[in-house]
Image (tube, rainbow over all chains, first blue to last red; front, top):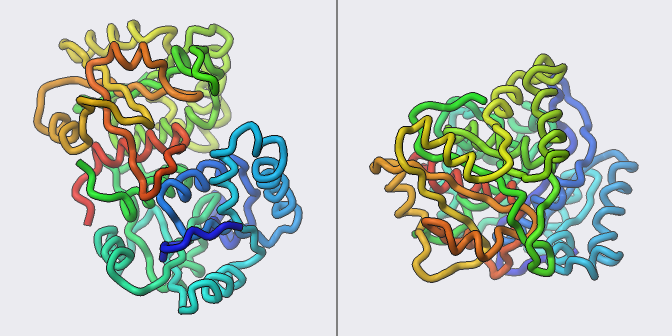
Length: 193
Length: 193
């Protein structure tokens, strides 16, 4: 795994504990296109690292095969840009191992920021978080949920809860790939002219 | 196809004329996840309509099967939110049929805005376009290219060329799904706090 130095924002895509359609906590399957799209966005916006987290060993194996194809296999020769993005990915079996690793790299505490399509009291605004990333000394891990989103219990235990993305309608069913891209653009893009 | 009234921005995903890896003009294959992700973003941001354009009949058939599954088939019962997004899609064999249809709906000319990962002289800034959409009377069709992007000839013939998305690094290889989501957020989201 490559770390981009100078970034105080890390990304984690969680496959547990997430909700299924009925709100029950499950471990979801790894989706290949999530790894590609989110790694490309993470690389574009200079995120410190991108962690793919699942407790299921076969799912880590599956994700590892995809990553290795593009980093060291035929994919690396075919598309070096994709290699550069996917080399940001690190596979972990739980979030504690992620925060342990970031703490060791950055030599400071890591705050966990969760994301959700629903708002909640005391949520962190995009502008506020953008300023903290630009001017503050903190290190943040942005946790994105797959399937029907992060479990409520997990979200309640996080340090911060980022405001939901509001579009222009009351429909808020973006893919996790779209949500990750929009969040990184809102937090890390320079001034847009 | 449903049209969201009150929107002066339409979206088209082009599978021709686009470039392959070597810069040659090709017709690309339709990708299921493009339809889902971009339709969900289009619905979230209240885009007037989402056109999927390909001259290849088998590709339109393939796209039609996906859409019908989620609009009228088992998918519609399983996930009504997805139905609402995918019902924004209309399949066309060329862009002229798209602009003809929009002109008939809106009863005025349609300006074609192309997007690219590369900048060009005279390009349209995001802020400028956002203001035109909010305060102007124009109707715009934002054309997104699949594969390695829209052909240079096609881009040169468009009315406007939108500025590329710049992240925080010199890496600019976002998926078309990520790019579409970020562009809609930059153009159509309200004030972000």
